[in-house]
Amino acid sequence: MPLNIQSYKDKLHHALQDKNFGFVLKGSLSTAVTLFFVQGLRFISGVLIGRYYGAEASGRLTLIVTVMGIFAIFINFGVKEALQKLIPEFREKYNLKSAYSIFLKGNQLIVLFSVIAAIILYVISPWLSRYWNEPDMVWLFRISGLFLPFYVLGELNYFSLRAALKVHTANMSLVLPTVIRLVVLFAITFFLFRFDNPIYLHWSTICFLPWLFSLIPIYRYFHQPASKEIVLETANHQEVLSVAFPMLMTYAAFLVTNSADVFILKSYHVGTDMVGIYKTCTNISMLAATLLVALNTTVQPKITQLYTQKNLEEVQQIACKSSKLIFLLSLPVFIILLFFSKYVMWLYGNEFMKGALCLSVLTIGQVLNTTCGPVAQLLNATGYHKQFRNISFFGAVVNIVINLFLIPRYGIVGAAAANAVSMILWNVIGTFYIKKTFGFYIVYFPFLNLNKK
Image (cartoon, rainbow, N blue to C red; front, side):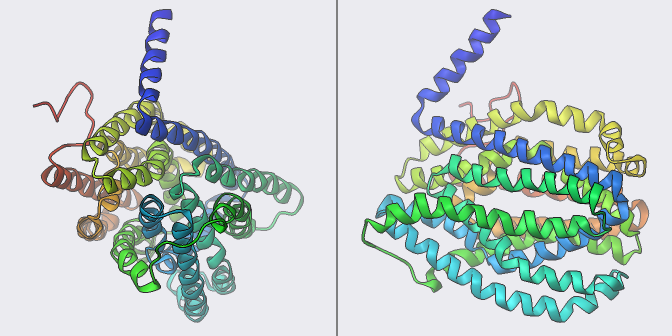
């Protein structure tokens, strides 16, 4: 056993000697610790909501989160993703002030789109309530529109800090709001119980507080250092949008994949309680991809930097090492969610155990997602975002078709299967496209070297 421990220490030390992968590794592990902590607290929050508010309340929260997610995609308009490419690129080519000017352009666009989105949501709220047969939710949808700009700007601040290579600082801005959320949930559940408390909590601690707490590091680590420099180069709003729009289409495709199931489930008169159970399963399955998310948000700025330097060999090394690392570290979570799903769902309450098979199916999709590695991030960072848009759109179409075919027969299990199949499909297509374009695979299969010559 001591020999094995020493062997792992030696491997870790060797990995950290690689400057570029060392940055990705440290940033990813820091992000992973943060996300596991945040997701862990959210898991506890979900258990509390399931136990004390029930599947019906979880379903109502799902409808609010789904609507806000849809509008957030179009408010963002791909700007968040564009800034992850443009900020490191402008910092590498010019200086921090030039990168900060791009950040400000992004904020201006988000504010404009937020006003438009809030008006649209206000107008269509009665229709949404009728469509989902929830007539008393009109005012909940309308108030959600007021929190949309904070939600999107908070995400923009978080990813902009990461793009500026302030990974640890960005991570810390997530922690405090999540702790506050759990504390407040305990308080209002036991001392001020209201059926829609989970929705109020979502507005305040998921939408508003992360934006508020991200302002301090943005000012300290981005605004202040940049103010000492002059802008060497910038881009106008149209140029930012020209990069953002293909990425909007990509994330619109992901939006379809992540939201079509809810709309189709409700269109076939699946109860709000079952929709809540289904979305609880999708949220839990994301725990299996936490390390992948952690790596992706760290690796994309580094890939952009290296690709700008025309260092393709190092891009390959980072992508391949990252895929292997994330798969091996995620394996214990996969095993728990795949083989002990019934016990995981029991934590939320007996009525949630109906989702055990659904959770296992979703986890299979996440296993393949993690195996393929940072497909989207590599293509977006290297200027192939339009090609990835096409791949993701194809996956979204397949997702809708399979949902329409399976949901009438199998309900939420059919929705889970559609989600898993479409996720596997776009990852596999993206993997082969990377091989065709760059000449190497980034997918990781244990004991199999696909890049061996």
